[in-house]
Image (tube, rainbow, N blue to C red):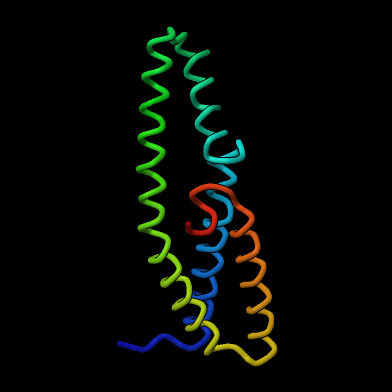
Length: 129
């Protein structure tokens, strides 16, 4: 079997990096449009109140369920974040080896932008706690 050319590997690696970065950047904006995690859960609870016409007891119980599940989601994120960071670093390092010095500087700038956006995000898709 023929070994893929350097250009093919470079193109696929850059595509992977862009895809992961775009997904990481866009997912929270698509899924979480309501600020902090607490604000998002309050928004969900308000929607349940209005759409399902919850009574006072149901409201309290649904609120407790959402808080419990929120804790589970945040714990899951804490478990996944280091794995994501490791994969991201390996990907960037592999791509860096294929680039010229000028391209590496541009990649560093892209990485700095990515990290700045990530740090600005509240909640589970922002920086690890």
